[in-house]
Structure formats: structure tokens, C-alpha cells
Amino acid sequence: GAGVSQSPSNKVTEKGKDVELRCDPISGHTALYWYRQSLGQGLEFLIYFQGNSAPDKSGLPSDRFSAERTGGSVSTLTIQRTQQEDSAVYLCASSRRDRGYGYTFGSGTRLTVV
Amino acid sequence: DAKTTQPPSMDCAEGRAANLPCNHSTISGNEYVYWYRQIHSQGPQYIIHGLKNNETNEMASLIITEDRKSSTLILPHATLRDTAVYYCIVRVQIQGGSEKLVFGKGMKLTVNP
Image (cartoon, rainbow over all chains, first blue to last red; front, side, top):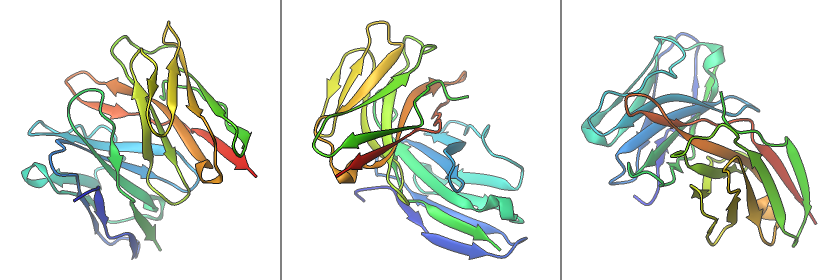
């Protein structure tokens, strides 16, 4: 597609439930990032995928968070046993690997844990 | 651990040029400076990036000092729709080939009629 697509756009879940957030990057973009943004805060790096390399998971806040990227394209961010502090907008971005190219962000998934 | 510092906010009159400053005194020689903006409730939007030469595109101009320790984003004719949080970012290369954009708090630009 023309841009980075994220789904769902909004998700309300009960505390303790698992959620899956999906990201469809721009075709041909080999780099994919997940960030999250809590209300009124800046963006917090979560995880980075590049091609077939092992992902950089250094930003994941706890072992309840995991992400995978199948076939070098679509990515899923999974949050297990959600907590209220997980409420945030989760943003996905993709980029060509070549240095000096910008990242294109999706519109995000707004997650609310009640 | 953002490598950039920006003033928290700035006002600009509609139709005038908006000059947004950024300091990145610890930038390394191969690190690019990127500018993004985020309008309320939307994902960040790429504006421009540069390494050491000044850059211009349809949205803005980027002026990087010769020592690369600071830069200025210029919106030549600000409109009300340019009101947003602007992020100046250094693309950080991490050992092992990973990299990430480290977003600071950004700067809120308000364009006034």
C-alpha cells in the first residue's frame, strides 16, 4: 500500500487480557520499528526489525511484550496480561535500509486497558 | 537518552518564517539529523533530514552548522496547519547493526493567525 497500515485503530481491553496489534509496512521497506506514546509523552522505542537479522528488543518494557515479523513484512506486537500502564498509542514505522532515508509512521493503535 | 535538545515551545505568526533550533553537540560523524512533526492524534510525519549539507524540500529547509553541533529547521511561510510538536532526532547506530530514532520531548510550535 501507499503507507504504513496499523490495525485496529482503537482497542479497549480488560486488564489481564492479551492483545495483538498489527502493522503492515510499506512494500519493500526492510526495516520496521515499534514505538509507543503515552498520553502527553514523547515516543518510546520498543523493538526494531531489519531483514532477516535478529530483532533489537532492547526497548521492550517487560517480558509481557513480544513482537514478530513474518516473511519480512507484516509485524504483530503482542501484549500479554495487559496492565493499565500499557495504555498508550502504539506506533509502527518502516524504512528502507539505506542510510539517509526517512521513516514512515502509521497512524497508530490506541490501546486502552480498563 | 535523546541526543538532541530543543526549546519546549515557540510561537510564530502565520505567513512568517518559522526557525526551529536544535542542539546536537554530541553527534557523531556518520549520524544523520532528522526532523519529524506530530500533529495531534496522528503518527509522526517525516519532514527532512541531512548529514552535513543544507537541505531543502517542498516542506522545509534544514540548515546544519559547519561543526554539526546544531541545526535549524526553517518553515518559510508558516500556516495554521503547521501547528504541531516538532522533533529533532539523531539517528543512532547501535553496536551490532541495530539502529533507532530516539525521540526527545520535541518542541511545540504554535502558529498564530
